[in-house]
Each structure stands twice: as C-alpha cells, then as structure tokens.
Amino acid sequence: MDEAERTALIEEAVIPVVGDHGLELVDVEWRGLRPRGLLQLYVDKPGGVGIGDCERLSRELGDVLDAAALIEGGYDLEVSSPGLDRQLRKDREYRWAIGKPVRCWLAGGSEVRGRLTEVTPEWLVLDREGERVELGRAGVTKARLEAEVPWPRKA
Image (cartoon, rainbow, N blue to C red; front, top):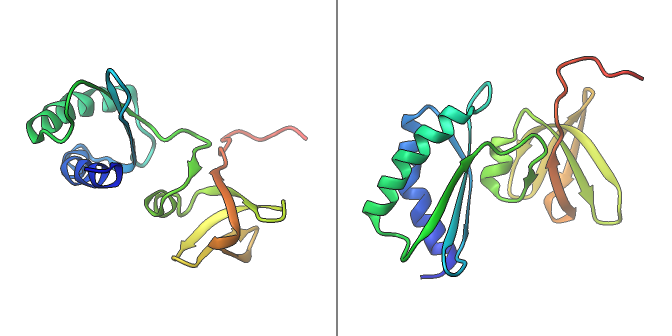
C-alpha cells in the first residue's frame, strides 16, 4: 500500500470520530519512519481547539486506528491544531481556510494577501479590502494562513 492509499484509508476511518467530537479534520500526515511511524492529525473547530480536545480525540482515535489495523508496526499518534500560520497544500486545507486571511506567493516572486473567499480547482479567490482578487492556482507557489491578531496593532 502506498502513502496516498494509506492516508485515504486513515482519513476514512478517523473522519466520523473527529466529527463526533465536534471537530473538523484539516490534514493528515503519515511518516513511515523506522523503527516507529508518525501519524499527525490536524483538527479544528469554531473558536479553536484546546489541549483537552486533542487529548480526548487522541485516546479514541488510537483505539479506532488499532482496530482498523491500517498501520503495521509501532507508530506515534499526534493530534493538534493546525496552527496560526499553517501552510496550505491540499484542497481540504484550502476549503477549511475559506474566510480566513491568507498570504500567497506567486511565480515571479510577488505576494498577495487577503481573506480567502473561494476555492476551485483552477482559482483561489481573495477579498483584499473589498477588492476581488483571482489567483490562478497553477501560479501560486506557496500559500499560508496569516495570523489574525485580535488586538490593535501599533503603527
């Protein structure tokens, strides 16, 4: 089984449990290292994820994954929030980031910042202070969440 197949099966097994906890699966990363693999799950919910959320989910997911026998040998399971400035790579991550501020780097070296409003296979659409900005996905070399600071910034 290759990494993409394993990841898809893991996602299929964990999404119902994640949802039962009122959380959303943002990303799954599997690193089949020796002697132990590492499975990292990133989850979120409105208002943010706390340590208690991650602990409860981790305990239950460990049992679910062991029962499903999708991972051979020993592995470590990490459940955490996506982070304030997470890099966006997969379609699910882009869909999750709709409504959040992002920073995109484009081929040629320019950067665009704005609030992500739409995601299609061809385009990322940002709202930049009321201006609609369409970015061709093929030209976006990197995209990252921008941390929202809840207090006023000093000039």
